[in-house]
Image (tube, rainbow, N blue to C red; front, side, top):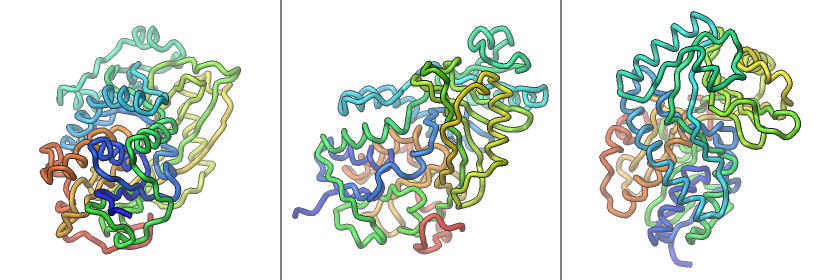
Length: 368
Ligand code: GLY
């Protein structure tokens, strides 16, 4: 068999999008994963939220998030055409709300920071908030709109990307990859989420997230259309409505590597969700699940060659932002494979920033 130009290890959204883009550019591509789409994307909510997730001290990451979100409309349209599949891409925008006076004070501080970065955040009067989402609890004190923060459904995205990659000529190899020498290709791209630590020694750590899925009764759409990000009595939650009646309610952020679901987390998420949107009490609770985000020491992704290994590219450590960063990661890694020249957008996201922190390969998703 002819050796592949590119072996992608990991068939989550990042790996699949890289495979699709590389195959579309005429490269011979193999994707290695025994269980495609079984990592963080299987539980992810799919928010494309560079604005609402622009946090203090993460300015460079925010720039990358904004650049990738700007690519999403074209990426979604091209993927929909290439796969003949819907991916649940929606553009109603995101409402950020505060339940109590304290919550609102905390939220306003962040909105001021985001506005200081020239990000589109429009504070709303309570009446404007309710005009947009009448289902919000009357006691919600205030909010703001991030109109360019959209959403996609990761559980539709993964099969669409698999179809698009396969149609473009990528081959799928369902064997696990335990070490880099298990694959033979001109370039190996490690897009294995938490598994990148075991394969490369990169400092990728698991960050647990517990998340719930609810369903509106009667097969109707939820009674709200925007993604809602709420501060509710000190809890930070998000609620993502889908056209088929599903609502994703998340998520905890825990420095742990197990995937148990705890009663306390479910209680906190439900309490905050219901406090913001009382109609949720009538919804079916259909899933409670935990996933592991691939975090890094600075919680930004690692994009580019391993030190001393120009033939091994990392596309890993996307932490809370794997879905929004899919287009920019796929396109920049594909250009790097084709030209050997990194896109300036990747500056500062290389593995070299962690020089001296390589732990050596270890077992997948172990605690650091
Ligand atoms: N980006 C949402 C989360 O990580 O929970």
